[in-house]
Image (cartoon, rainbow, N blue to C red; front, top):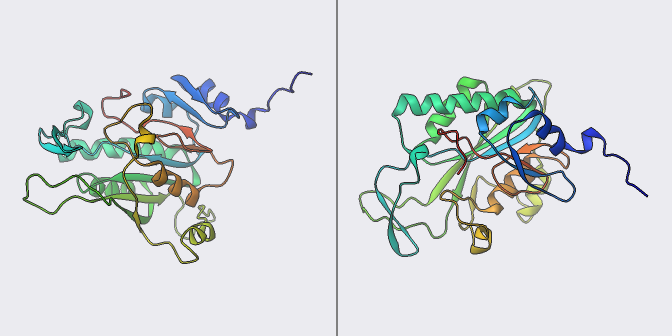
Length: 257
């Protein structure tokens, strides 16, 4: 006996694919999650206003400055590609404004966004958020137990990254963003979860399909989504995450890695 046709609201992958450019390269068996290969700016243009519950994104940090770093005991170039090269303070900030404003448009009135960064960009991202109408809720510190050594010995070893969490809902408005407080408390042994999260870098198992130069641990993305989404929410993060529709982070070159 043939299965009844799936209702449109139960097939978000098909709905998004019908309105957005790009190629669907992976879907989960229940068609509730997917990975698209597309120009992220063009793809977001096909997403209706006020339609996304949560966005998790990892934008360029503009770290490709011809310097050196240490990977697995070897000295290697920090250059990742033209998309990661700074074009100067003003142009870099305008880039952050452009993609954050597009994210703001597609978020639901109570939607939230998570943005990773280092000192190289999070100051610009935070200001761009405020200029675009977001309300910043928290700045999470991701602490890395085994960061790359400081080869230059001219500053402290970089061992953390910042994750800014913000909402489209204004303070005092009728819209309430999702925060699963009790779930986070239980995950922390019955105590309130603080804003410093100690997690290792991506494991070898997470690099099964190849290593991305700015890859984030699945645990980090999962915790953010567990804290701020409900089953059935439509999310736009840049990785394989349960319950999520997946869009790559905004690259200035507008090309996928």
